[in-house]
Every structure is written in structure tokens, then in C-alpha cells.
Amino acid sequence: MSEPDGYADRVGREFPGGEYTLAPWRAWLTADALLDDPYDEVPHPVLAWMAGVSGWGLTWDEFFAWFDATADDGPMFGEHRTTLYRPLRMGATYRVSGRVVSVERKVGRKAGTMDIVGYELDLHVAGDHVARCFNSIIFPRRSA
Amino acid sequence: MSQHISTQARDVQVGTEIPPLELTVDPEKMKVMTALLADPNPIHFDPRALAALGMPERTVNQGPLNMGYLQTMLARWAGGRDRLLSFQVRFRGNVLAGDRVRAQGTVTAIEDTERGRVATCDISLVVVGGAEVLTGTADVIIEE
Image 1 (cartoon, rainbow over the protein chains, first blue to last red):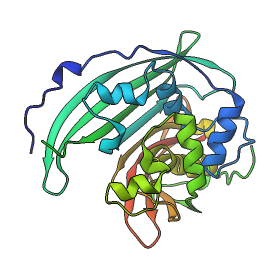
Image 2: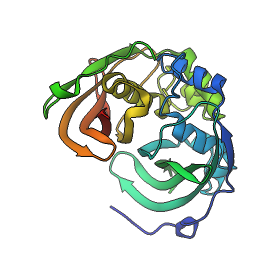
Image 3: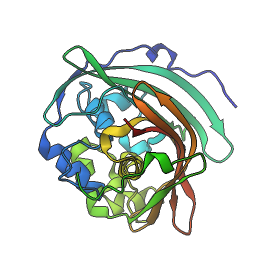
């Protein structure tokens, strides 16, 4: 079931953006956290999204606040897509840009009212489009 | 690269099962990911916060770690992390500290493209003895 929400004006809002350097120590710790090989010279593909949300120019709290939410509300991942036009490179500095692309209010029988926010992030290096990630995040609205 | 279980492209066909990847989720790795992501959500590191939310006092694995396990499985099978072209998942449930999870997948299509021979795969992450928590699809290069 869907119903109108109060956040439609956020669709299209651009993130401040910024840069992210895929430093070897970040790649090492990420691979290790995944119980994967930290000595692989190719960065783990999950770093595409991590680069995006580390270089988008916002903190998570600031992003949540765009939707009147906080970390204490228990936001959850909904869907994720990564498209890699080129492999990630160790040591590269990526220009990060992105935007909110969708907002939808839903009411689930068990979960209750929630707002589902979709955003996408782009990584570029030297004019080349390296990756695009889409992610949706679910904000529970227990008081709605 | 090391520890890759690279595939022989000529042996891959529709229906081929990707060698599964099983691991046990370590709560200490969630703390590393929290720091890497500057993620303030306490459900990933603070059992007391979970109790306050009425949740079991086992920390909740980050979504990027869950999807990273699937990407690791795909990269090892395809012969490298640089062989992942696209990846799409829906998050259907939580993975908790101490859970044993299995990443698995099956080839559903094979196509010759300008980037090489590409396998499209259905993929999922399951909690062993429990629920399916991620489902999706991915495209990987199996022969350049």
C-alpha cells in the first residue's frame, strides 16, 4: 500500500560531493573485514559504494536529517546495485557525485509505515566514469 | 591475487553452480566496518543499544559486509575482483554476530560481449539453518 509522503521535494537533491582516495590501508582493512584476502592488489568491489558514501560530502547523520530521521530510528538497507564500468584501482582518487533519486512511503502489515529513499552515487577519475551505485534505505516511521 | 578458485570458462554453462563461500560472522569485523564507514548506527557495535531497541543482544552485520561476501564468491570463481561488472541485491533479513552464512549462486545466462564472455548469475546469501537474507543477480566476466 502506498500513500503520499512529505519528502518528494528531496528527489533530485544533489549531494555536496567530494573526493575519495582508495588508499591501500582502506582496501586492506575492508578485505580483512570481509574475511577476504587483504593482499590482493585489486580493491574489493564493495569499495565502490564505500567510496561513494565516504566522498559524498555528508555525514550519515546529515543525510538522515534530510528525512527527519536519526541512526536511532534503525534505518535499514533495502536494495543495492553497483555497476562497474572500469575496475577500481588501488591509490586512485575518485571524484564523487550523487543525488536522491526516489522517495516512496509504504505501509507494511508487519513493519508499519516506512519511507524508502533511493540515492545514487557516481565515481569518476580523470574524466572516466568508473562506477555507479544505487542504494535504497528504509526509514521506519513508528510514530506515523 | 591469491586464494582465487578461478573457473574454466569453457566449462561454464547455464545451470553451473558457483562454488559456495561459507564463513562465520565476526562482531569485531563489524566494528572495523563501522569505523571505515563512519556509520553511527549502534546496532552494529553496541549490544546495550540493541537491548534498548528490544532486539536480541547480538550485533547486526552491516549490509555492505553481507553483499561483500557475495562479491568475494563471484570474484574468486571468475578469476579476480576486476571481473565483476554489475551486482544487484535486495536485502531481506538480518545477519547477526556469530551466524554462519553461505554465499551461493547459479549461472542463468552466458553472452559474448565486447568485454569478453559474461555470465549472468542468480545469487543469494543464506544464514545456514536459517533464512535467505540477500537475493539478486550479477554479471561477471568469465573469459576476456
